[in-house]
Image (tube, rainbow, N blue to C red; front, top):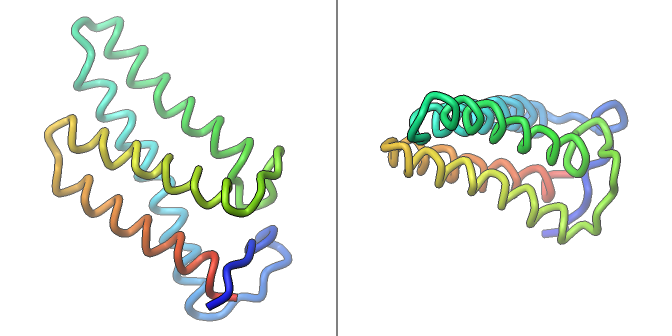
Length: 125
């Protein structure tokens, strides 16, 4: 098994496996943002903190994703190991957020599917 950076979306060689995984990865990214939004709006102790967390947490995740992990080519290129680690950490934060918000099963699903998707992304040509 060879681990490699998939490269920009427009330059990838698409197979049925990578196409399905691309769709799954996009759904997981949206799920991550929704998880952080849900966590934020259910966690804060006042309407102001709930709003700040519900908007701020997904905004921070989106900024991190856009800078370092974007499929079209990130703004800042990280070493491969750091890129994979950061991607797993960001998804883990979403999974933990769901667990903390009282949705542990959804957190496990998000975390498990993210782990599989990242593994496929970096090993399936």
